[in-house]
Length: 238
Length: 272
Image (cartoon, rainbow over all chains, first blue to last red; front, side, top):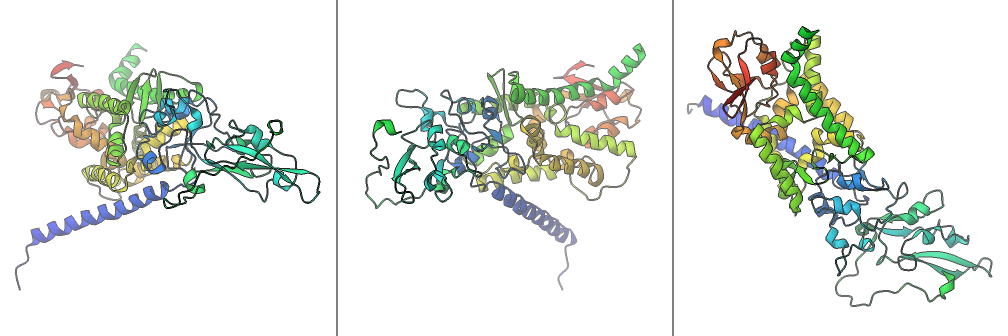
């Protein structure tokens, strides 16, 4: 039997110990970080980069939160189910009031909130270009689509007529009334959540979801014109 | 009364300054969010002085760059300013700024109060922090996420004070208990990758602790006070400055020394 080199054996063993500890620790660490970064229903401030880029750019400093005049924005803490330290808002509590000078995005030191994406051709800030999310209506529980005269969400929208409008339909139950059904146009909706905040039902029947969660994709091979949801209605009816 | 003040000055002047700075920074962060103060706004990841001068955690910026983030110039300038500052004054962040130091020093204080002298529950090598730092960089690159920022108790503490703690207190309590019962100086002295990062750039520091061997009586007070006692390897052996990178320049050794054997030294010059 060959002579055993004890020093060499010990060195190899110590190396394996170190490698194992690093690998196991690293796997747990990576697992935790990966899970924590998967919060899909988080709404970001105006101008936020797409979520994966946002998480690699936001330094978690809270300067956007400091400069939010309505205390809309919060920084995710452990237990919030938000990637820890990143800014988010919950419109049912406090919606985004779409400040014209966009102080949150202007405060961002890293570019995770991209002011350029909120700037029009003339170089003026245009908060209507925000795409924080998109409002989605639960028609089964919305009281307007069940015949009551409610247009709270529509009236709350700063882009009424573009991002949301009333689709007046005949109420077949009474036969002589109209139903004021709210319809959202995702092409114009900023996801500010003023509608969700204004909704009168016990649980909001219009809620803002991240666009990548709520919106589908037709595919490049469909060459179709953009839809026009806006119904032909006389001026005085809105 | 005068002699009492003199005693406090001799033995606690740096400690008092450190606590004032650590708590003052937290207060400014809190005030910036709660009351709109402008002197220092943000948190320890990135902040602004008077709304103008940017500051940023260079390790956080490095993680974001490795994660593939395309960062604006402001935060890069902020990181550079902080990097230069700590290259000049050493790993002072850990002793003078970091809020976790309040927690780990409290654990050490409790340890001494209760007279714990048990050997550590597990052995940790003080070089482990460099492995953790390497893991931070590799995992940030691999996951395209700033991995330390997801678990950092430093960010959790500073951000928690300014913006709401959530369950972050559990992480801080865990570190307190770990330092108290498991390993003495466990987190800051063995694990923290930010401390490791600042140690690496502290080699060029212009502020060091200086030792005069002839005055030393080998009483051991400095070793007992030091959170990184291996940096005091020259004490009682030869004159010179503390050059080992893990020294946090907390100057506890200087103030506990009753024999004028340890001083603060500025780029070769002397001052007490």
